[in-house]
Length: 292
Ligand SMILES: [Ca+2]
Ligand SMILES: [Ca+2]
Ligand SMILES: [Ca+2]
Ligand SMILES: [Ca+2]
Image (cartoon, rainbow, N blue to C red; front, side, top):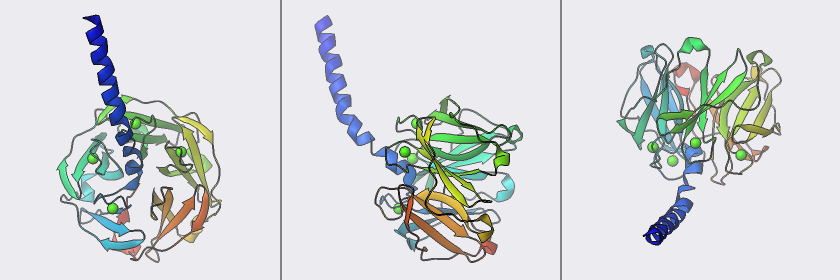
């Protein structure tokens, strides 16, 4: 009887071993922001005045089409888009919303650009706590999207480790950065291609762009990127992605005054080239890139 159980367990373990390689695929997808599942990074836009949520479906830096998502959310509802991820592990990009007044954190589970359902996460965080959502990632390498929080007053950086929309634990990262340092979290990515989520920082006053290379929630090193961009240039970091499909994280920039959208194609922390995207959007259009 015991032997049979052992055999059954061994068989089950073997079955799981075969499933695991396919799941590893979920990690890059998590960073892609890919609304049409062609494995090419797309860009998410939001216009608070109309409530429209729009996706630029890209072929590299070329805009191929720009469908609206199926639901609208007027900005005066107090809801804000805080990032993207894959909260139900179906390989399709979802959207993360936050309403500071109620503290609710909500996920739009998408099938492409169609909203299928919108469950709340299991924890709430009132906006007056001073905590801000800064992005998503997979900080414990379980293939499930987690949420990155930052509290400028204390300098604490915190990760909500999620099982779908359930918060399982919330460890602090190993380093602190007080908000009055002028450093701001601008996104997440995997800058050293080790399959572990890293954090992107920017200091407008110095123009420095910096990465925290992480091992889970531990900061291992923090190299600067090879280029600087002073904040008074009017350029703003709007997110990350992989715009040339080389498996390396790139950075998305936007200059509202000119309407230019630009991609820094990176090799690790080295900027290799910086092509503009094929479309422009003037800042006074009221459209904002929310592609974290
Ligand atoms: Ca795509
Ligand atoms: Ca999904
Ligand atoms: Ca995770
Ligand atoms: Ca990494």
